[in-house]
Length: 115
Image (cartoon, rainbow, N blue to C red):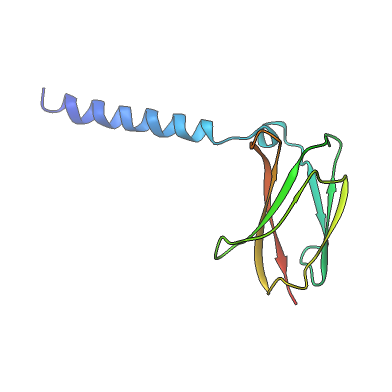
Protein backbone atom coordinates (compact mmCIF):
# COMPACT_ATOMS: atom_id res chain seq x y z
CA UNK A 1 0.00 0.00 0.00
CA UNK A 2 2.89 2.38 0.76
CA UNK A 3 4.29 1.92 -2.76
CA UNK A 4 1.00 2.57 -4.52
CA UNK A 5 0.54 6.10 -3.17
CA UNK A 6 3.83 7.51 -4.59
CA UNK A 7 3.20 5.78 -7.93
CA UNK A 8 -0.32 7.21 -8.18
CA UNK A 9 0.98 10.65 -7.19
CA UNK A 10 3.60 10.47 -9.92
CA UNK A 11 1.02 9.44 -12.55
CA UNK A 12 -1.28 12.29 -11.48
CA UNK A 13 1.58 14.78 -11.72
CA UNK A 14 2.46 13.60 -15.25
CA UNK A 15 -1.19 13.84 -16.33
CA UNK A 16 -1.52 17.39 -15.00
CA UNK A 17 1.70 18.51 -16.72
CA UNK A 18 0.63 16.99 -20.04
CA UNK A 19 -2.72 18.76 -19.85
CA UNK A 20 -0.99 22.08 -19.06
CA UNK A 21 1.26 21.68 -22.11
CA UNK A 22 -1.74 21.05 -24.39
CA UNK A 23 -3.50 24.22 -23.20
CA UNK A 24 -0.52 26.41 -24.17
CA UNK A 25 -0.87 25.92 -27.91
CA UNK A 26 -2.35 28.77 -29.94
CA UNK A 27 -4.29 28.56 -33.20
CA UNK A 28 -1.29 29.91 -35.11
CA UNK A 29 0.87 27.06 -33.82
CA UNK A 30 -1.70 24.45 -34.71
CA UNK A 31 -2.11 25.60 -38.30
CA UNK A 32 1.62 26.05 -38.91
CA UNK A 33 0.98 29.30 -40.81
CA UNK A 34 2.55 32.51 -39.58
CA UNK A 35 0.28 35.55 -39.60
CA UNK A 36 3.05 38.14 -39.24
CA UNK A 37 6.04 38.46 -41.54
CA UNK A 38 8.58 40.92 -40.15
CA UNK A 39 11.68 42.26 -41.82
CA UNK A 40 14.55 43.17 -41.73
CA UNK A 41 15.66 41.06 -38.83
CA UNK A 42 18.03 42.11 -37.28
CA UNK A 43 16.77 45.67 -37.69
CA UNK A 44 18.59 48.98 -37.29
CA UNK A 45 16.26 51.94 -37.83
CA UNK A 46 12.88 50.39 -38.65
CA UNK A 47 11.04 47.08 -38.81
CA UNK A 48 8.13 46.18 -41.08
CA UNK A 49 5.18 44.09 -39.95
CA UNK A 50 3.36 42.51 -42.87
CA UNK A 51 0.16 40.67 -41.92
CA UNK A 52 -0.35 37.67 -44.18
CA UNK A 53 -3.39 35.92 -45.67
CA UNK A 54 -5.51 35.58 -42.53
CA UNK A 55 -5.43 39.34 -41.92
CA UNK A 56 -8.50 40.81 -40.25
CA UNK A 57 -9.28 44.22 -38.80
CA UNK A 58 -9.16 44.97 -35.10
CA UNK A 59 -5.77 43.38 -34.34
CA UNK A 60 -3.22 44.90 -31.96
CA UNK A 61 0.58 44.60 -32.03
CA UNK A 62 2.46 45.11 -28.77
CA UNK A 63 6.26 45.17 -28.56
CA UNK A 64 8.09 44.41 -25.32
CA UNK A 65 11.74 44.62 -24.31
CA UNK A 66 12.92 41.00 -24.23
CA UNK A 67 14.98 41.40 -21.05
CA UNK A 68 12.98 43.85 -18.92
CA UNK A 69 9.49 43.00 -20.19
CA UNK A 70 8.65 46.69 -20.52
CA UNK A 71 6.07 47.60 -23.17
CA UNK A 72 7.87 49.71 -25.77
CA UNK A 73 5.24 50.15 -28.48
CA UNK A 74 1.62 49.35 -29.21
CA UNK A 75 -0.68 49.95 -32.15
CA UNK A 76 -4.35 49.01 -32.31
CA UNK A 77 -6.32 48.31 -35.48
CA UNK A 78 -3.13 47.42 -37.34
CA UNK A 79 -3.10 47.95 -41.11
CA UNK A 80 -1.97 45.06 -43.29
CA UNK A 81 1.50 46.64 -43.63
CA UNK A 82 2.98 48.69 -40.79
CA UNK A 83 6.45 50.14 -40.18
CA UNK A 84 7.79 50.80 -36.68
CA UNK A 85 10.51 53.41 -36.20
CA UNK A 86 13.21 52.02 -33.88
CA UNK A 87 14.97 55.28 -32.94
CA UNK A 88 13.78 54.98 -29.31
CA UNK A 89 14.76 51.28 -29.08
CA UNK A 90 18.15 50.30 -27.69
CA UNK A 91 20.17 47.37 -28.93
CA UNK A 92 18.71 44.01 -27.89
CA UNK A 93 15.97 41.42 -28.35
CA UNK A 94 12.31 42.42 -28.49
CA UNK A 95 9.14 40.33 -28.28
CA UNK A 96 5.95 41.11 -30.20
CA UNK A 97 2.42 39.86 -29.56
CA UNK A 98 -0.36 39.93 -32.14
CA UNK A 99 -3.63 40.12 -30.20
CA UNK A 100 -7.22 39.99 -31.46
CA UNK A 101 -10.04 42.21 -30.16
CA UNK A 102 -11.00 39.64 -27.47
CA UNK A 103 -7.49 39.79 -25.94
CA UNK A 104 -6.37 36.38 -27.23
CA UNK A 105 -2.75 36.20 -28.40
CA UNK A 106 -2.77 34.94 -31.99
CA UNK A 107 0.98 34.98 -32.52
CA UNK A 108 4.13 35.90 -30.71
CA UNK A 109 7.67 36.24 -31.98
CA UNK A 110 10.93 38.05 -31.53
CA UNK A 111 13.27 40.31 -33.43
CA UNK A 112 16.65 41.89 -32.81
CA UNK A 113 17.63 45.55 -32.87
CA UNK A 114 21.30 46.09 -33.68
CA UNK A 115 22.05 49.80 -33.77
